[in-house]
Image (cartoon, rainbow, N blue to C red):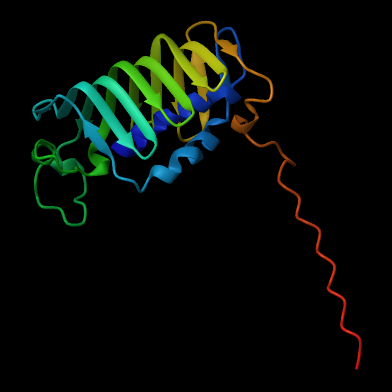
Length: 222
């Protein structure tokens, strides 16, 4: 779940399929963005931080100080990453479970059950980079129960090539594939023809099947 939460932020720079509006903007271009980073799912995740503190009483693990999360060509940077997890009894043991508690596993650098993660808080100078897209903000929160991620900042800035969109709060619903800017006006700079690759396909846009090739002529009879 940590993997998907971190990668879910990559959907944010691809929100240029959104339309602009005064109070809110909403569209369904995010599913294509999610497909764009799905190629990284099987790649290992590397988390670097200056320190890791496990607060088992609060059921939280805190990575702090120049936190860098990397998977494939996706990099997340922030000042602090807080993982809130359930107790050992709340999650079904995974195959090969050693019997360690989630706190013991985190402290030793090992994994915990994906179903144990209930909330992620990503704080301070949040930056998500892929090869061509960048999302920046001050805080991102991922709620596993609702499967939503919210990025806030002053402002939230999404860039992809020459395209830029700014807003106060961006919420991505990973279930419905809906993105919404809220909390004020949304400013966007869209360069014509540069955002077509981010838009969701329209009905009838499916490629037409190629016409069958003519059969090769038969050799003359002997």
